[in-house]
Image (cartoon, rainbow, N blue to C red):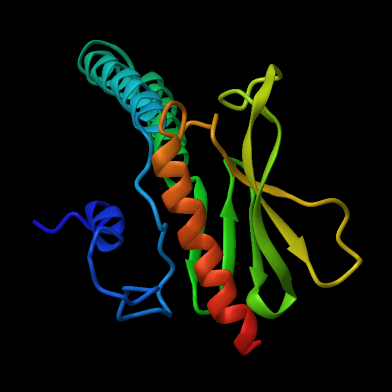
Length: 185
């Protein structure tokens, strides 16, 4: 069974001189693997969902079906939360850059992107209100209608906490995509 999430990082470990090692560049892809914190939190949500599903089966066998349906619905919500956590991150394709967050997704075409660069700034630790000094990949847009510079990923988010080399590799690959397709736009 192919595991496409394993090919993201392996594609950039090649010694080939191609900056963008993917054949199908129209397909949205994350240029890095999900981090252990993100996968661990999603696994805990799925573990909780399995207990709730087991409870739904017990309620269905011993109680009312309407109660089991409510508990089953709660389990589906927990599964959806876990999947959305795993889907969060920065995705790139030939069409643009997509920043997937837990609640919303923002897609910016390459021709509207001025630059994507790494800066040293205070960043949020695992998305919590506490800030620490770290690096962030920020998006600078061409149009002046957008306020601020959105932070795409940081060295202290769920994907890159204690994985500075992985952050550098992912930031470099997103910058390469921006340079490659920003010139064409």
